[in-house]
Image 1: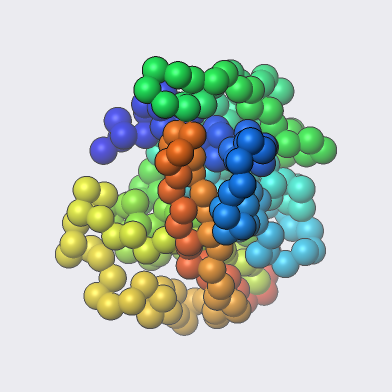
Image 2: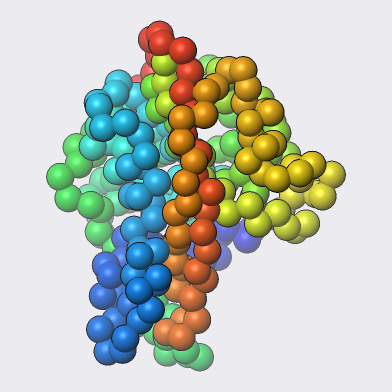
Length: 252
């Protein structure tokens, strides 16, 4: 399964998804439905569901090429981004070091347009750490965090319950958890016996209670461009959770 996330094609799609400008994703040469425009900047929109206060440390699970990790660093002193894909983490860390990345936007057939991914401006990169890792087998000494973010990750794990069972230890008492999932449970990622027995929201409530209190639920659309005329438009269920107050033990 890991090889799925190591292809140059998927890396290019995610660099565009995370760092492409609106004009690069939806060029101005045609009229696009408003819903497509509304679905841009998903990696930054999901992190906006944390409370606006500052925090000491954050964890971004399934960070892909890192845009949401960068965004979390605007209000966190330290943020660790973890993803299963080695190529995604190499790309995220290159951007952390200030190295723009060339990639190809697929237009059609053999036609590509070369673009440049740049890190978002105004973020102290010394606050960031990127690690390759498995969300179901995180190091026991990883510590706990004031904020934990996991977007579009749960329904891509073979055993998502293992992550849910670990979350009470990952989120410090008083901390916040933001989960986003399109609930697209597929056999190629998750065996059916590990799918939620009913609706995903009810499953999250039963799995995270009583350690977490559900603060908010909403929907966030996202858009992934595959070619000039083919896009994935999807909406994710976003839930925001809180633990009791206390201190976090951050990984630095």
